[in-house]
Amino acid sequence: MMESVMWYCSLIIGLIFFVWGIVTYFQNKDNRGMAFAKMSIKEIVAAWIMIFPGVLMQEARLTFLGFIKSILLSLLDVLIIFSGNGFFEMEIKGGYIFEAVYTIVLSLVNLSVMISLIGFVLQFLGGFIEEAILESRKYEKVFLFSEMNEKTLSIARSIRDNKENGKKTAIAFMDSEQSEINKSRAKELKAYCLDVNISKEIFKLQKRASKIDVFVFGKSEEDNLSKLNEIAKIDFSSAKGLIRVYVELTETSWGIYDNFVKNNKLPADKILVNLVDCNENFILNDLFDHSVFENTRADGEKGREIIDVLIVGTEKKSMEMIKSLLHLCQMPGYELKITVLDSNDKTAVIKQMIPEIKKSSDEEGDSIYSLKFLKHIKYDTLSLEKAVKRYCPEFTFAFICTGNNIDNINISLRINTFRRRENNGDNYFIQVCADNNYIMENWADGIRDNILLVGGLEYIYNYEFITLSNIEKAAQAVHEIRQRDKRLEREKKIKEIEEKEADGNKEKLEPYKEISWIEYSNDEYKRHSVYARTLSLKYKTKLLKKRGLGYDTLEKDLLWMCYEHMRWNMYTRSIGYINTDKTNINSEKITSNDRIKAKTHPCLVSWDELSEEEKLKDGIKLTEDIVKVFEDIQ
Image 1 (cartoon, helix red, strand yellow):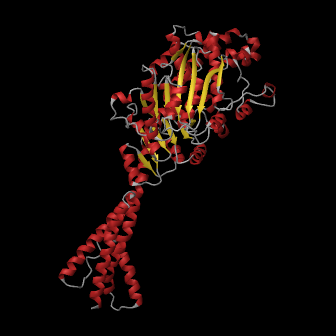
Image 2 (cartoon, helix red, strand yellow):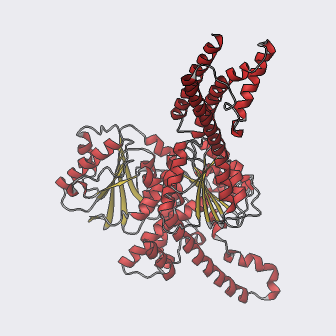
């Protein structure tokens, strides 16, 4: 009787653990490694419970030691189940039907044990296998992401969508979770999903890949900077090609970390670190692709073309738009007018960002613009339309970014309706920030005329915007053309210098020294500065062509040189620089590095106050090759 009870209890309890193991797997199937681990534990317990009675019955005497022995032997039988032993030699008590049911259940349990253990091992080794495959193949391009999230997935999709990235391109995500969802996402992109530290992977791949782009876009700025510090400790001496590291800064200006590369003494020919403010990159790319000079209105009194800008909202993107427009629109024959509708009062924020900002400036040689902040505007009331009607009824460009997608769409429709009703013509366009780029798909054509959706996740976090590839391509081409001219000038100068003046050669040839693009752009201040200049240069080439002016205008015409200084003035101010007392700045105690840290510059003055030597620096040598670069990119 006791034997029968034990067999029946063993069947019931074993069946409960068997079903529990199956349920556990489906409850955790998003992370298969963990699911197989939990399932295998429950299935092993089920097999152990069901084998235990048969082992115990083989004991001649049921003593305490025999009981312990039976427990251990039954557990051992479970662990060696792959050998074919286990239950086949076990005599089951309880009749033919009970024996058949017991045998079937125990067979299923044993099968489940094998499946769960094999599944766990394969999942555990999966990351190592993928890592080994990635490191064994020779790829021309490798794109590494510090983790898998919506931002990095968006960048990776844009890489895969680029037809230039063929079969010899690899994408890999560093993913400690190794969840089934993440593995599935990686599979869709034909990417690797690795449970490994990104700095270790860079070190292993640098010997094999011709080009490695690394994207450190984590959950926080602190996490990103921590990973950057780890990357900086890598020995890059064996790197086959250039490694570019893009690090997202979410709260801090790139200027704070401008000396990071110098302090870490990273080899400029092996690694290039770019600190990325995605809002700044988005605006630069946006203005590179969409001209604000095409839609203007004439000012009869001053003979200027007015770039009349309406900005609704004071989110980060809006602030970056204000900063970029202030320097881009310093062009001969143009005047910038910005009206900002603010639901709160963020005038102090813009003042903190640009300490030398004014409400208006109309000094040719310093800057020409007006900036009006209208505070506490309620967007959901008619005060919006009233403000537009009073201050900028003929706006030529509007940028809507309030932080709320629905509000942005509603505001764009309202001001578009107002603009059409109050003023004839389509001499304007409206940009609306919205996360979903497909929100306008079902709108009638008439409703969405003059409205462009921007600022979505896929719009901002794509390879072209993050790397500023178009602006970078133009800036690098311009730089290399200028270096070529420097080389020719240097060769000419060498011929002019007699050998007896050998001691003075270095000093005389210093202005003609060539600097590689990598070396030049490995300085954050220089890189951002040249991007701003390149953006301006694109539209200057168009204006010269439109006005029938020669390419040498930018280099020799004092008016255009003056406006280049005005552009530099506003750019330098837009990144927080101020002018200070010249006697202090020119002091031998204050170095160039000190000035950069203090964000001060002695040239932040009107054109007339510059020395003749400084004025010459505002001349830009424009060639047919440079113009062709912009035309090809366009």
